[in-house]
Amino acid sequence: MLCLDTSFLINYLHGRDHALTFLEKRPNAEYSVPTLALWELYAGAERSDKKGDSIAAIDDSLDWIDVIGFSRSAAQEGARIRARLFDQGTQINAVDVLIAGVARDSGADLVAIDRDFDNVDGLNVLYPNDLYSK
Image 1 (cartoon, rainbow, N blue to C red):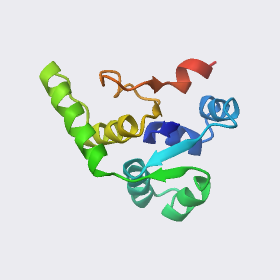
Image 2: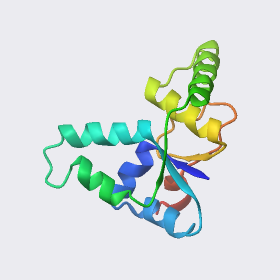
Image 3: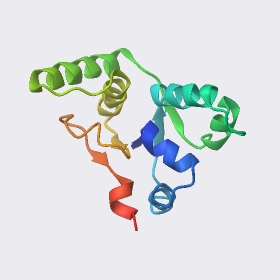
Image 4: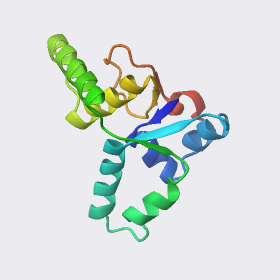
């Protein structure tokens, strides 16, 4: 399973070539999105002045992706990740820690654009912008 991070989804929603190519190269993959990533997208849409940015538009555009909720076991994984990063002297924002917890708990590879997840042990992160940028 491929778990899509907010940074990837923003690139997809904006029609970026590397995001579209990543999906086209994996037509039979099982995709998921954590509710936490949806929350980030919804919050951005609510603050946006751009026409067409709305929660409904996001839901319509992403109706092909399975949604993964934030479970007790994902919370436990997130806590382990946070503690490990703290011990290493590394910090990433709290929502990204929780998204990493969801991905690791579900055994999924995380698909991201930003490098926030580089220091999370036991999490395989795929970076489409590295794979398919011109």
